[in-house]
Amino acid sequence: MSFSFNCFSFPTTKPDNSQSNGGSSIQLPQIPEVPAAAEASSSRHTVKNIQLLKISIQNELEQINTKNRNKPYYMQKRKNKPHISRFPLHIRERKKPEIRPRVVSIGPFFHKDDKLKGMEKKKMKLVSHLLERSTDQTLLETLLKRISVLEPQARKIYRQQIELNDNDFVKMLLLDSCFIIYFIISVSREMHDSLISLDWIIKEIRSDLLLLENQIPLRVVCDVYSIIDQTLGEVKLPNFATILGQFIYMDIPWQFLTELPYQESSYLLELYWKCFLPDVKQPSSPQEISSSQQSSNEANFAQLIAFTSGATKNIPSATDLHRVAGVKFMRRTLPPYSRDPASYEPPNIGTFITFCNGVLEMPSLKIDESRKIILTNLIGYEKLIPFEKRKVSSYMLLMDSLINTEEDVELLQRRGIIANALSSNSCATIFFNEIGDLCTVDYKNHLFVNEFKAVNEYYNTKWNRSIAKLQQNYLGSPWAAISVFAGSFLLMLAGLQTFYTVYPYYHPR
Image 1 (cartoon, rainbow, N blue to C red):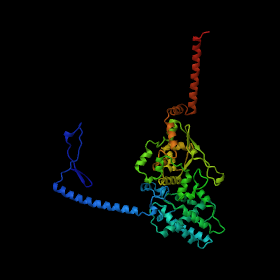
Image 2: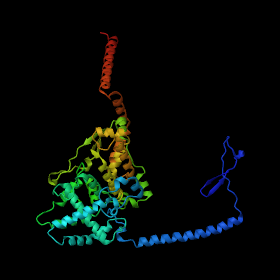
Image 3: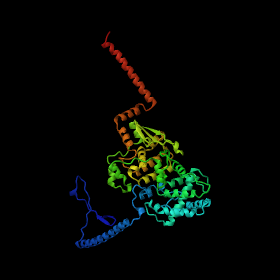
Image 4: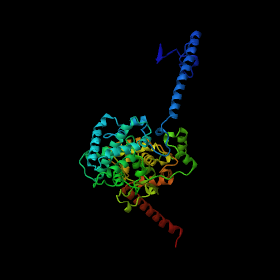
């Protein structure tokens, strides 16, 4: 009798009692002896196969080296400049609903997706409508010439090679730019146009425009907007920065910037990222400067070990912090988006999240399907930039640490820290836990590293735990507090009675 595994066959033998130890025996397969002639023949074939395999591998390596030497400029490393890239394959499979467009394709990655072809016809309709309203009969030619000039630079922003030829790529940029412009104007309500009704899918389209893999260069959109504005005669388009700000801050619950940095942003998702949380201070130590000069896809395993060794990686959950150490959670109110930058005073990042005297203050964050999509893509974007700039990853790691169970979600909802618009607390818990797994930061130098350390120090202090235990056991409810007060009062009266009984005995008059 024998057990077969693929092409190998192992005969079974009876156990040898002489090798038994304590009544147990180890059964080992016996390898049959190979005849000398067969072994010599096999050896010659093996050497021949190894030589062929060696030549094959060398040829493949030479092709790779030749390809790297001849790599076009747009695929070369671009330090300190985020590019448009696709998610890794394992993340694309796990997070397919959060990273694929549902209504409209923007850019080359989903340009040929059959499920999104319906919106391509509407893009052509928009371009036709713009040409009809223009007073310049050469508008189409002017737009194509301008985009053709920008076409080489536009290709450089994509990390992966674009399969579209020059004409198709320029046509795609024109159609997508016009669609983005029309949608942003529609969202701002600055101009009323019933050409295409988008109200019923406005959230879906906005989410699609903020997907990492669904982007085109913002410079192209700005130039197309400027050219169209100059050819509409008496009709003028609204200020681009104004309507773009309304689009970006449509669902961000806070505003840190008075001016929209769209001219310094490569695409819409990067602009949203800059507005979601303010910039982080640049590192000052040599080790931090070294890490900031390369993005995550260039970091090796040794660097990741250096970033995580001896660092505070997480904090206890919200429920544990509250029950064990008596930590309180308080909602921090931040001023909402303002259209008038002159009268707006943005908050300081130092007051965004604070921990002082056992009170953790945080702004409220609404979680719905659209926010899930945006946050996932922001995390994907941060994988393209240096570790110390990953501010959203730092924030989501903090939220992931606080939320482990549905009970944590319920506690933070009562305190106003999160507003859960998903179907259940379980869905919110799963979302925070899954997105936390995607986050990678330098645990020694990220945006909220001081809060991580302060919370852990407070949690591990024995005095704080004792006070929290006293409050939980004896002051957790009004009746318990009354009982403790009454018992203390009776104990005090008993002590006074004992004192006045004993005192005259030792101090008679």
